[in-house]
Amino acid sequence: MLRAASVPIAFDLRPLLGLLQAQGLGVRVSEEAGEQVIWAATESQVGQVRKALDSLERGELNEVLRRAQALNEAAQAARPSGVNTAFAALWRLAAFLRRCPLTACLAIACLCVALLSRNGRELVPVLGLFFAPIPFSSFSQLLLELASPTNFLRSLTPALLHFGELHLVFNLLWLFYFGTRLEKLQTPAIVLLLYVITAFSGNILQYYFSMSNAFGGLSGLVYGLVGYCWLLGVVAPKIGVSLRASTFFAFAVALVAMELFAGDSIASAAHLGGLLAGLAYAAAVGLHSRLTSG
Image (cartoon, rainbow, N blue to C red; front, side, top):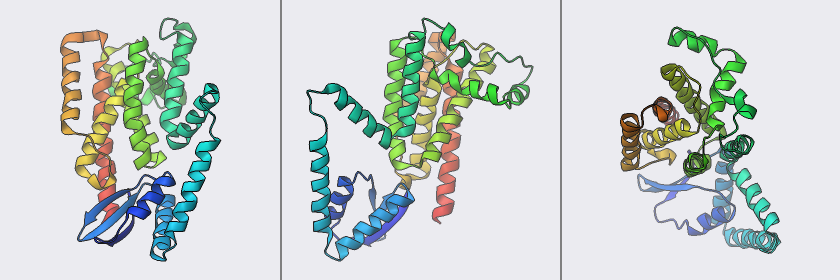
């Protein structure tokens, strides 16, 4: 996250935080060297925080907050009533797309593929989404083959495939849990690259070890999010992304258990590849954050 402003420890930030909440901004406050430090996710949010802080210091914030609350109440009143559930659902979907566009688009793509394939029961319409059947004699040769734009794209699309309702639902639940938190705290470019790297790493490792393209799902990407959130919280806690160590190790134990007891029925290599990619990406993002923050 970006350092937006700092104020003395005795400064009452409650009116400011109330205004920022009314504006839909997710900021974080920490205490450093006797000061309260306000952190924001993007440069535009930094500007909004500083503008609101200026209003507070000039004694104008109460009026600004009153107007923001009035606008929020007007927006609430303008929303469709519970009678028209279709419009209400569309309203909520539009709001979610604005807040978390990457996670929402990925989830919608998975749902569309699930409908098209009848949750993996009709595979003919989605054959082009499976990992390309590339012959290879070494890992380096496989990587070279993926330099082709078509092959590279097909190294990502298996993440959209699911085989059964539970497979789809559990993956989407974890995607929403991690993805929505990440999009509030980090830039779209960082989150998009995280999704691409973890999906790619999980899928290519699964294809390499199984020598088969009969796999799919978001599980590798989800494991990547687990590793990323945990390690980034350790190496760069100021960013605000974190995950309990107990949760991380629970996922790690589940990965080992699946390998021992489920065998070939579970794409364990995809889970491992996504996890390792998430950890590596977290280390890189954390190092960059430390270097740029001084």
